[in-house]
Image (tube, rainbow, N blue to C red):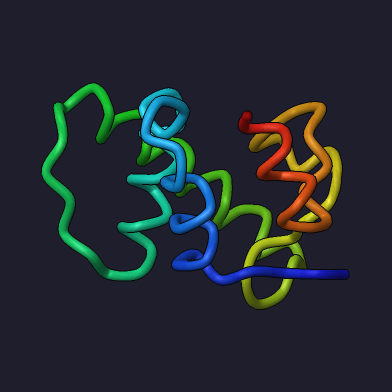
Length: 92
């Protein structure tokens, strides 16, 4: 199984400003997992907290270090996250 660090995922998801706004709660959750303090509206923080909780549940269930990159992670339904080229294509 391939995996990527939270920092790497933030870089990928943030690479397109227009699409990054739609992924803001996910990006915030990942940035918070790296220990970064993030200033965003309360609503975004609430959704980010839910996302972090789901990530932690998946990791506690044996997902291992990093974040699993395969179809069906629930983070981006229908997008194959197995390689960064596929992910970038899906964001265009």
